[in-house]
Image 1: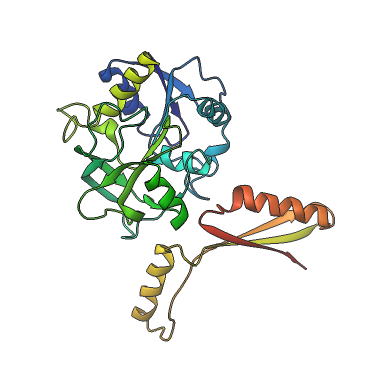
Image 2: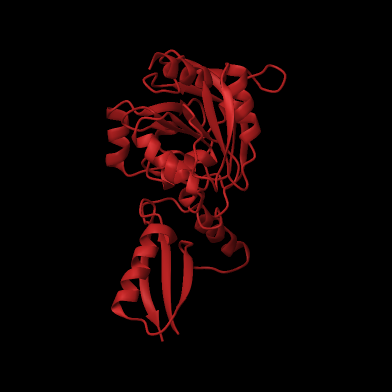
Length: 223
Length: 81
């Protein structure tokens, strides 16, 4: 099972994401932002970090990278795509997911082991969890506040597309405690927290993040 | 050469943490009577030749596509003499 991990200039969690794919039992495939070839992968991860062009808005210029043209097209065709942190911002800027991410309401960079509740298991990336399951994974962001208009938020809630929600104090001012959302089809998921940093006991607070990566492997196998 | 200015501002209903931080610093420096601050971005675009209607329409498209994110921001476009 081949899972592509895109490296943008400024990506810093690409190696961790690739490692998480390997720990989950998949084969990570390195993808370069300037290359539009997805190398026949079965899924794509847009990792965290900082995209070039964050000066303008996070992900605003990365969205126009050659690789994103291919990712957007493939996502419309059903390819599973997971955007983590900056990857989530890139997905919103790409219009693959609704809404936007703004500077944390606390005006500080936040770095914590964050408790989350899995709200939807009907996505390519969360099928291995149980609905309502609580997990703890690292969260680290400066612009992680999820915002959208009320109609969009209501639609996301109504269609079961809020994938994970913050439990406890809201770390960044995200509306309705939203930590992650999915597109209508459930193949595209954006997450602000970092499951790829919680896949091994040695380096993570838990191994709770592994489910995101095993989910997609099972999904692709069963597809 | 003509100059076109694009101003991008966070939508009124969107929280602006940067503006809030600036607003809270002002009274500490003795600047009184400022109720709130919104912080935006100003882009100055030098265009080749005359600023025609066509060119302006192009800038508006750029403002909508790249310079702003319509989900969270409003923009205005104007020609500067």
